[in-house]
Amino acid sequence: MKIINPAESINTIISMIDHAKDYVVLVSPYTDLNGWENLKEAINNASGRGIEVSYYVREKEGVPGTEELDVSLYEVSNLHAKIFFSERIAVIGSAHLKYNEDINWTFVLDQQSEHHDMQDFFEKNIKPFAKRKR
Amino acid sequence: MKLVDLKENLNTIISLVENAEGFVVLISPFNDFEGWNRLGDAINNAAERGVDVKYYIRKGEGYNGMEGLKVNLFEVPALHAKMYCSEKETYISSGNLTNDKNINWYIKLDTQEEVSQLVNEFYKKQILPVAVPYPR
Image (cartoon, rainbow over all chains, first blue to last red; front, side):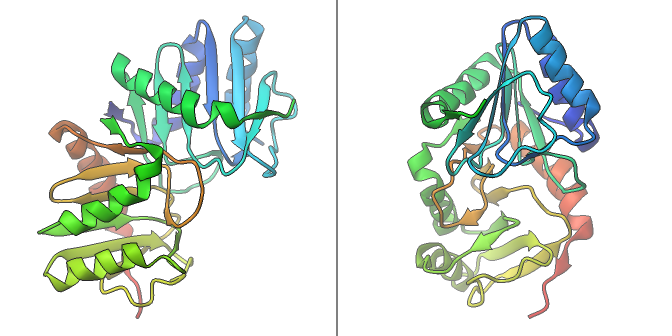
């Protein structure tokens, strides 16, 4: 795992999406993508080239800025974990996908075992409790 | 890195505080200790045996049950990151120190390189320069 310069956090997530070849999972309990055109563009470009993009948010919190996203959107009760991964790489952070000036850290999990462990956390603790929203 | 079993998340942090002998740093932007004595007791016990306990919260979020804590409390503007460490163990998490049912992951950093990255690139650069002692 490797810590990311805060100024590069969102670019790291966008790069992960851009390089995905099979699937992308975005877990951001609180979300506001208004004004984040480069992120939204990366997500829709991935969907456009056949990548399965799944987006998980906290139940009843709303998802402003996601109206035009071509993703499968799910809600999960009490969700507070933030995880972003493709079949290749995982990114974890203390930040939600909300544009603000908060102090956060971001790590890339670039080892196969680290990616596996975080995906396993998702499969056991988040995915089984998800309800399809759209 | 090593992921903590979800059920053990908060117990892990209590254990970290209980096992500390030198220092504890808790960075938790949002906190709620109401009705949750175990962590508060562990923190005060550590302070009483001479452990240097530093606690960083988000500016403007208030005590929320932390009034009795014998710690060095600091406020940090716009803090949203979470980090919990002693001289023995270091954890990063998506979760705050709130007694709730939220789904969060806790990760133990188990190499010196991982810990150094976090301390040098996050704690020393982003937290220490802007932390202000909380008025008590």
